[in-house]
Amino acid sequence: MKTTQLILTSVVVVLTIVVAATAFSQAPKSAWPAMNSSTRRNAQESLNKGLEYLRKNQKPNGSWDMHEGITGLAALAFMKQPGDWKKDQAYADKALKYIAALAKSDGSIYSKDMAAVNTAIAIIAFQQSGKPEYRALIKKGQDYLVKAQFDEGEGIKPSDKNYGGIGYDDESRADLSNLHHVLEALKETSLPQDSPVWDKAIQFIQRTQNRKASNDQSWSGEDGGFVYMPGMSFSGGTKSYGSMTYAGLLSYSYSNLKKTDNRVQDAYKWIRSNYTVDENPGLGKTTLYYYYMVFAKGLRVMGDSIVTDLKGEKHDWRDDLVKKLVSLQHPEGYWVNLDDPSHWQDNKVLVTAFTSIALDYVLNDSVGS
View 1 (cartoon, rainbow, N blue to C red):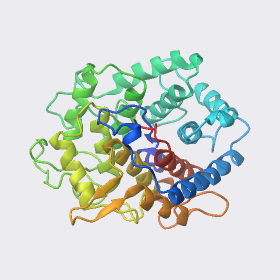
View 2 (view 1 turned 30 degrees about the vertical axis):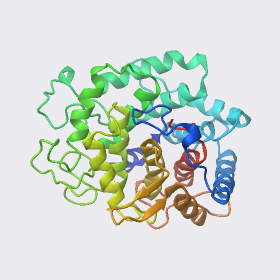
View 3 (view 1 turned 180 degrees about the vertical axis):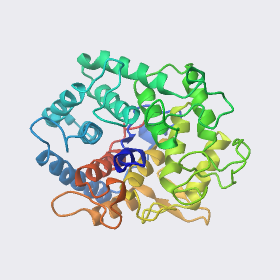
């Protein structure tokens, strides 16, 4: 697998990356417990430093690192910040114009590879901007992503393990990371709830979960966590790991399952059993900052400010995450994974975008609600 292919799939984009509406029931804004004032202050100061680093490193053409996926994530970090993000509109606008120039006639939006995930990030960013001039690109991008799903159109039968999934392109095998980003984009851009895309996606998501009651693959275990793709885990064999379990949880949410669904509850049980902000459980320091992003997004959609682990210990995840991220931030404002630079975690802009989005979810009570 190429290094560039792993940038955002073990991750981005989006990412997350960054949906405004989910199927999981949320606590009403008034009922969401207030954050510790010190935690909020530290989170805001840390986010401010991260965004300032991004401001200083945007290229004159509007991109970050000449990469559309990274550029989309950085733009989302600005547009998802709490309060009035319009103060940073100039940075976001330049980024969106750079991305829009890459649009293809078939609706995809990318430069060299990773068409599905980069298109997904792009239309999320366009949607978040609220600018009417991007409506046509959003619709074409959405149509492209719907067609990219592996189904009968590609001669793939429901019994095939790739059915309902998404790959890097029409000829790739499917994986949960790509699908997670695409489902986020389709949800964010209001694909109708009765679209067959969602049920097909659920068939694939189930086949990446270690849960025999819903996974028809012979390799499945029973811990409720998720792997990268049916029968394969970056943690070794078919072991569940953190970032993909949060991606699986989010994918179920985007696909309109309820929080009370047993598949969701079993995924959350794995999370409770493996709760940590010290590592990406099952992978250690690998893709750590992508883990922090999906950690924040996943726990927000579950609607709980406190995670009670299986030993009965209560964890204020927002407080835990902010303390960890503040401790890892460099004085210049960026974050970078020097413990494990694989999957482009040595890219300061990408990692800072991931982390800033995580802080957006910590701080902004309207994100994900």
